[in-house]
Image (cartoon, rainbow over the protein chains, first blue to last red):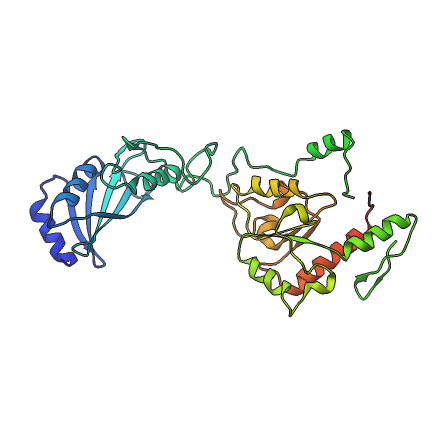
Length: 178
Length: 159
């Protein structure tokens, strides 16, 4: 199926309210409220005419001050049997959890941890929702638009620790530095 | 005091002949540990290979174990998760040891003023020579290496 055929098939077969179907630059796009994502993904994966068996990407967009709700979680699905693709956009507000897709797609585990790490979007019923790229002591979520680009974290050293050198000298260790 | 001719530090035996001899020996037998993390590594390879040839300065053999090296050359961007590893590598080097910061990223963070990148390795390890440039030309690296040799020649040495 090409994108237009896919969109028309989806329009006739999916019965959720608040769905928006468009074809954007040759790829079929479905916009949906975040609470319906797991149901939609189950249907897309199990129905044989769609058979979206692969989740190629999962990321998020922060539309701070430009759209409400603030965040958009973007899923890219691919069908290895039919060779067609679909993009699903789920609008989600700050603090509102999104249903996790880990039961359907194992790769969603790490993707959702990354989105939590960098955007602070929570995923409901995720088995292990903790930071994946940054360290546990990191404060905030750096890809949010209101995170200052030059903010320094508490664990970042400001200067070379002079105190440590003094302690070494007091202990009588040989310092070869001039 | 040091005698400098043609931008090369020859050194003169001053008050302490031991400092002079040890400095002379150590400046011509530099074993570098290349801590290469980013694109500056290409310039480092250019410096190390035959066209620019740092073997002329006695620094031709990189050692890939910090325990066998005495100059830590940090080449490229160091981010916050890598900083403890850099500190660990520095701590494992045996005295006497020196540090060269190669390029803008290692020196001050370069263009990356963000949440991930360490704003200069001097926040983690003490640096002797900073080499500017993004990436530095090989000539500048040779200049930095000669400045380090001069520093080694002129400093106090202990056994």
